[in-house]
Length: 380
Image (cartoon, rainbow, N blue to C red; front, top):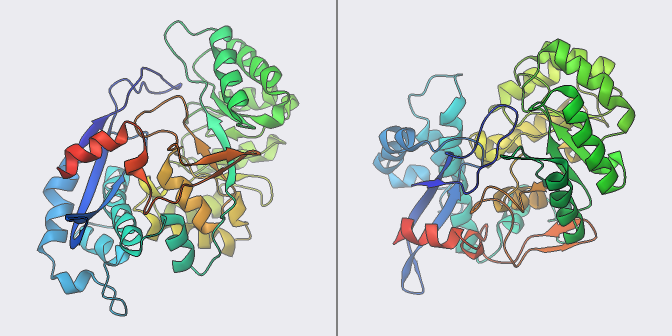
């Protein structure tokens, strides 16, 4: 079911005024409290809904499969990896795009279903599945905002950032590339002053720049000691990423628009990213789900990068559980934008710069204000 995002904000490339998100339910034959147990998920934030791909290709494939072929033999429970493989039946290699997000919504809904069946939060199930101890004390978090808004000015930006700071977020991310360099620098300088230093401010160009502009911004930003400089250029321009890493002394961040293990392998081989400094932002909700995402993390480690270099894109509950379950570096939050999906539910506790998932079974999406009503419309 497509659900519209609320709010009229924009980055340097796109407006989100008309964006939608695919909300998906996987209904089981297990009954709890007189109702079928349902797994719920969505395709992260920042892509339009993929209703056609889901309705015409992926859902019919899964529904037509032999049910036993979708089960994990040892447990007899639904296997997200097997469901993903069936959803991708007859799809050619490569050409990932929107189908990666469509498949992710289905695959992640299976994880939600499994966690609800076990009566535990998704982060606990994810940690157990992959042989890890869950981050039960929470994970580092920052607030993503600083979008361009109609009539935007420095006062509006700093008021927004003060709100995040006062709510307990130790760091923020703002957008760049939507104004001439001088105007963006004024925004960056205001953010640094508001947050008490550049180490608490990341900037995101959303792939806007070619080399000349990326380099000019790198020179202008270098003296501010920023947390990171994100997606300066097209996400598949690995050569430009390499050149940027050679001249920019601070951390660069990228990966949210890489949707497959092969894409991440190419980034590792050719993108010039530096272990112990740079940041990976792949998002399971945009890249075939948790099954594929875990392979991305393992590949990072094979190439000498710590998994704590991973800060998934998408400030929502699903990624919070994934970060806590896999022991990643941290996650972003969308406390002020992209409702009803952005941000966390009231049971999630923010303290000392860390956010702890609530103990609701699954991803806890039904406890998220505004989203619960959409889920009720979907499952009836």
